[in-house]
Length: 241
Image (cartoon, rainbow, N blue to C red):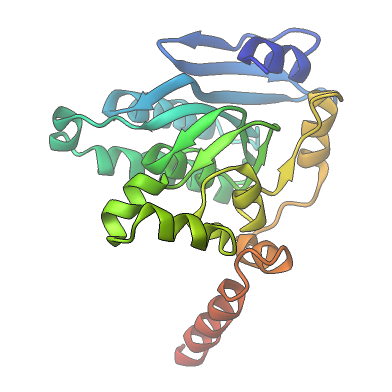
């Protein structure tokens, strides 16, 4: 689905969401009479310092008045911008700031929902979609925390070895099915149905105050040990208080 099609299905009665230089911003009405703030990245735009700062500013603009307006983050991005300029300007800090703004919004009572409908990878993926309280996706989305060639350079393992490991270990593999199995993607939406209704269903579900992706990954057999390790860490932390 294109961005226009997605927005039309999310907001059949109209919206004021705009796309400018690859960045999405605006608002749309909800069936219950409220509204949702919309931000995001379209057209596989890389996220550099300017993009991260602008997106973070949009999140802070939602937070400042108070209230509990939800934030929908639409994502079809490249990775972070691979340029010497952005790295020297501290791109890692800009991406961290964006992620922290989304996390702060969630902590202050603004539901944050990521909607992955295209490609995304690396730092741009982590600072946007993965920083939301719940991540949903459309069929055909192409997420990758790290592609296999990059993973090969970092781990010094061959592509063939990584491809073999990816068959049984989803954390090694890019793609929607693997990210869903690890618990990173909670729900894959139905493009044949109303996205407005499906978004309202997500918003109507009780908000989880703790990150449950490790538990979801265990249930789906994508991250069988993460939840147990997290629980042991929590127990040690509680014992030390």
